[in-house]
Length: 172
Image (tube, rainbow, N blue to C red; front, side, top):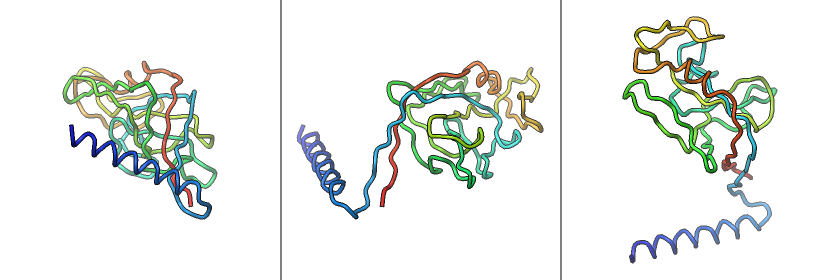
């Protein structure tokens, strides 16, 4: 019980400090950015089918792509965590045969042209069943890993949905 009280006191002190810093002009701070009613879609393969991001980084299930700015950088910086409000993304795991539920995603890719912060494309992996072809609509030269699910089918079946999320942005 004492540990919970100390933890609560520490968190409360941290919140008070952040509010105090936030109120002082000229100081840097973390700003919570809320995005309600964002469009969520899903994709598989990535990077021409090799499971790579737009910048060539290896993608993992639960990574996210967002629109990019005119300079090619994502509208939400790489490495930013997107915290889903009252929702988690269920992604079938081709290795274990189970399902991984993600209540937060990491921006590690961009795509869909230029746009705003109201679109999130969730990466579903590059799995295929041994009986399935290694193809994904719109992706050439797919490179698949044989497992217990088909990431392309799962991404297509995910479709389009609307959800809310938030993230933190550093403000100078």
